[in-house]
Image 1: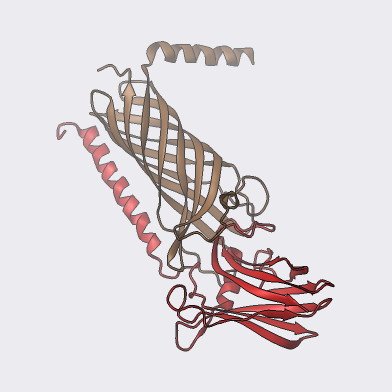
Image 2: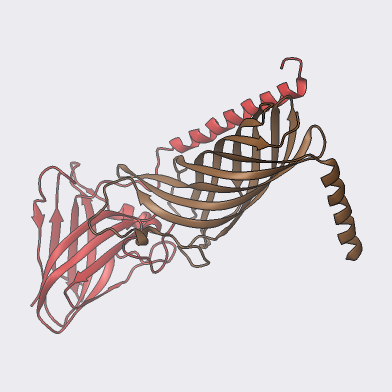
Length: 187
Length: 209
């Protein structure tokens, strides 16, 4: 091989090829991950009418997934035939003081979406906010309740779906950062 | 037009009679190296992690001289992206059928080459390496190809580079890199490129020693 100069040249190029591979791998060590955010242990649903807060319902699991059972999981009591403005807030209580994760979700809105899935309930839910690319985000919404009394649940999901978020995605596309069933009574 | 067809035919016949045409099969591992950028204020884009996958394919080797050959191929490639998120990985796994055409230089068993590559997206899905939620429906993981936001453009193109070593019996190992030059996203402010490295083991049949 030492007598084969073109072969040696190719061998050197191959070394360059391998080196360039490892150089490109180094780029992946960026600690500022655009897709990372704090763990979410607490979900708050804030119900308002005419910009006056009526009630706040919460799911709270301060030690995170696993470990102790959730400390709080409120039942939503809603009036029939009403229209509510609803905001959702996400927090991490594994840290002291607790971290409000909501601004990070707003910043990473292009990769996240909140879904509200009523089960056995006549509630029309319309998302009223958009991410930076103009797609539904779901941190703010309007809930219009039906005319009949009923009891069921509203499933709240925060989905993470980098690179594949569009305007009308399935609520199961991607992976759930939050998935909570709020028992709900229309009275 | 007739003259052009005649000329191409003559060149083709000339190549076929003079060139040594062999074919080969290869398979191996891919390491997806994606670029995913969102051009929005305040967004710090990161490079996704390596996504392990595989490839399998075949090729023709049209020898132009003792040292040079053209090598068109067809290859099923796994590519995509892996993003770390809340202690798990969120993958976008894409399978594409790619047609690279490499111009190869050979010397003493070593070979090196490069050329264009065109591909077509066959399937794509999201996958998280974490316990799946109850009632999870895998149909919902599928990512569609098309022209709508959230869908992936099906046609991709890039530049392929390859190098390796071939034994006299036709067995070879190679390393390749496909630099994806297309943007798979349909959204103006989003760039998605799915380049990848490959390491292959293959065999070239019909080789005259």
